[in-house]
Image (cartoon, rainbow, N blue to C red; front, side):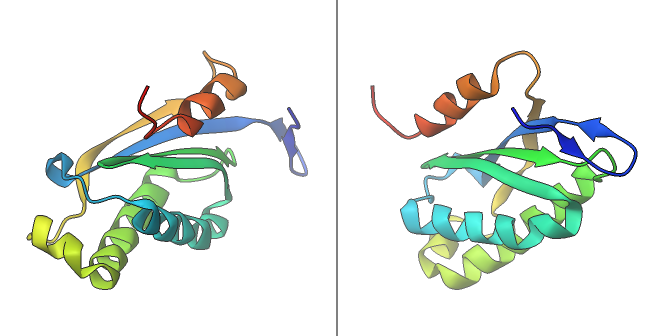
Length: 133
């Protein structure tokens, strides 16, 4: 895997993010997921983040992304969750019927560093999301 660089360091910081819809409501389809990904990609450059992999199930998303050592991950997540919540509910009125309050995402999230499993293992896991075995 190619390492990232800046003037004084070499690094590879990979994160696996899982965001769950509030109350585990099943509101994510391919259109909602695609739009959620677009929002992620629009915001990522402001935080030195690069999306590597994305997939979804009906009530959650998985994202594999690279970050810079100085990236404020919690600020990025707050920004993403706020923007995507607002935009997804505006653009997909059917979501408002299932999520009547202001939140789209659950307050909690899962963020894992990709150090214990190979990136390919995580990538395959994310690719398989939503498939019935």
